[in-house]
Amino acid sequence: GENVEQHPSTLSVQEGDSAVIKCTYSDSASNYFPWYKQELGKRPQLIIDIRSNVGEKKDQRIAVTLNKTAKHFSLHITETQPEDSAVYFCAASPGANNLFFGTGTRLTVIP
Amino acid sequence: GAVVSQHPSWVICKSGTSVKIECRSLDFQATTMFWYRQFPKQSLMLMATSNEGSKATYEQGVEKDKFLINHASLTLSTLTVTSAHPEDSSFYICSAYPGGGYNEQFFGPGTRLTVL
Image (cartoon, rainbow over all chains, first blue to last red; front, side, top):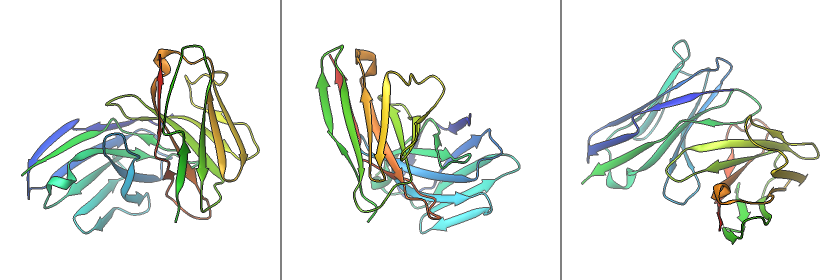
C-alpha cells in the first residue's frame, strides 16, 4: 500500500514567519494530495489539495507544491498567525479515492 | 452542504461487549465511505473502504471479523466493533465520498470509544 512520510513532526515559528511541511509518498499511482488541519478531538479540515497534473496551487496564505518525479509535496504557510497552531496532516490517494495519511506535524505559532 | 454526522460522539463500554457507530451523509449520497482509526497523538489510519451494497475492503492488518462494516444505503454506513477490548479504545472517524468528479472526502466529527 501507499506509505506517506511527513517532516518535521513538530515545528515552532514566530508569528508572521513562514512554515513549511514536507511529505513524500511511495506509490507512483497516487494522484491526489490533500492537506488537513486537525484540532484536538475534532475532524480533519481540508485546507488545500492538489492533483497530480498540477505542480503548484495557492490559496491566500497557503500554498502546496508537488514534485511527481521525486514523489514529494510540500505545504507552505506564509505570515503565520497564532490561530494556525494545530496538527497538520498530508495525505495521498493512489486511487479508489482512499487516503493514506502522513504522521502529522504539530505547528505552534508563537505570538 | 456536504455534512457528515456520526453517532454516538463518544461511548464507554465494558470489555467483551460490541459497539455500533453510525456514519451518515446528511445532504448528499455517498458512493463510498471510509473508516479511519486515530490513536492519541497519532495519524489517521485507513481501516476499510465500503461501497453501498457490497462488502467492505479492509486494509492489511485490520480484522474484518472484529470490525464489521455495513453500508446499507447511499447515506449510511455502520462500523461495529465486536468483543471490544481496551486496546480498541480510539477515535474512530468516517468519511464520505460523493463521487461525480469530486476529489474531496467529507469527514464526520468522530466517535471516541473507551473500552474499560
